Amino acid sequence: MVTAEQLYEKLKNIRTGNPVCQFTREHCDRLLPTIKKIEDLKREKNAVILVHNYVAPEIFYSVADYTGDSYGLSKKAKESHADVIVFSAVRFMAETAKILNPEKTVLDPNPNGGCSLADGITAADVTRLREKFPDHTFVCYINTTAAVKAQCDVCVTSSNVYAIIEKIPNDKIYFLPDRLMGENVINHLKVRGVNKDIQLWDGTCYVHEEYQPESIDQVRKNFAGVEILVHPECSPSVVDKADYVGSTSQMLSHVRESRRDSFFLLTECGLSGVLQSEFPEKTFAGSCTLCKYMKSNSLEDILSVLENPSPHHVITLNPEIQSRALHCVNQMFNYSN
Ligand code: 13P
Ligand code: SF4
Image (cartoon, rainbow, N blue to C red; front, top):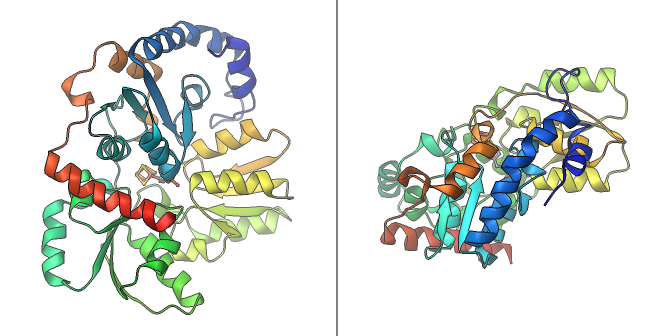
């Protein structure tokens, strides 16, 4: 189990918005009793805790068994031997863990785990679209409900969307629900000389759609040598001006390998916190926009679902939806291999 000193070492370089607001050693001391109870329950119930890169750093650096992006965490869920999986992120990620592990108990501790992308399209919408586009392969972003995945052919994440859509043998693709990511795929394939008919649903991530290319121009003017990293949920006008486009974990790996020492990130600001902690010698600037859904996770709620989960916290899926959604998610693993 992490000690208060170790936790403070991980948190002390993270700026929580205002530069004068930082984690203190006393705050870490106060978190320890809750962390200890969670660790005891994990052992007792043979549970693992998966934590997304955007989740609050006091969770990320204390009780997480695995941290990562949506692809990495799905892989961990698929490989897990635990009886119970607690998924500290948002609902669609916990649902994906259940799709992959129908026999395990999957708990979602987040009382507000929506996502503007996943909430923006229903299974009935996809059924209607399939009638309209019968020859298209339906590719869904992982940011969708299990019911939507069950209506689609192949699932993708931000770390593999470009490569998988290029590999799919059909030239007719319907990509949903992220319109901006879809436009980025179209531009990427054009540059690679790949010509596909790609139809798009009009969903967006309410965090990433806000970023504007002018902020990149401003940063380049003021900070010579800065490297610009953006998430593929940003608009093409932002992606066009970036030095690197990738998933949250890909951005982390990129910073680890980069020779530069200052970075500007356009993604949810939880990732900047992780990077500040991992690379204290490097400088990170960027948006401080929060995803209200990811930031609804708390240590108290993780403790509470392990102690006594309410039905709302236990992921249950209709078996037919689960098995059809599993086929869609497994197609992603097949294409990734
Ligand atoms: P990653 O898969 O890159 O972690 O992204 C998930 C997400 O919801 C980004 O907003
Ligand atoms: Fe969904 Fe955007 Fe939040 Fe990611 S950052 S979980 S895409 S609302």
